[in-house]
Amino acid sequence: MRINKLLGIGLIATLGLISCGQRKLAETDLKKLYIPSIVSNTDLGIELQLRGRIIKVQPSRISFSDIDNSNNFRDQSHEFEYVFVDDEYGDMSLLIYPYSKGILERGATIRYRAMIPPKISSLAFIKTYVSPNIQIPETSVINIEADGIIVPGGISYR
Image 1 (tube, rainbow, N blue to C red):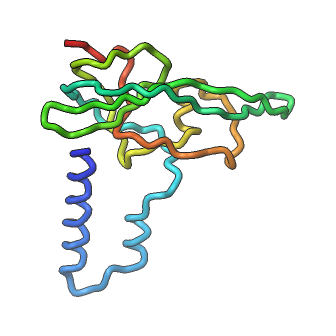
Image 2 (cartoon, rainbow, N blue to C red):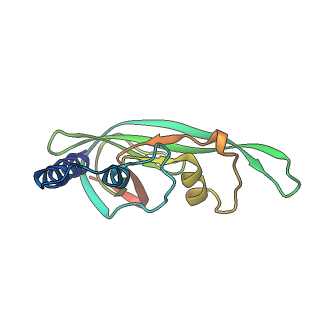
């Protein structure tokens, strides 16, 4: 959450600098600032470390239809975990563990990759954590929202 606040401050400062000049904010400048509603990239941010307490683990799944070589649809699902963390500063973070795993609710140090903006498309998630060769109809793509994705082996309990 702090990363998002810092980015918001940076965006406001950038807009302030643009508007301090003699010209008005051009339409091309607005297009540069536009963030698409479906996040298609799989480029996650830098690896960060979070110390705190895991207060809730919520199992979830992505259901999707894969198109096979014969152009037939196959229904599949991929399980993952939402992990709610109350950090040592009292801030709440929502992270994703990309696979199904028994995660304990207790104190931990967590390594994760931040997502900016704090969401990833289901297509990018599936291609990254299930298979890069999966073909999914664009009509079934949704956003998965979280502050970051926990790296494999990234939870150390205290």
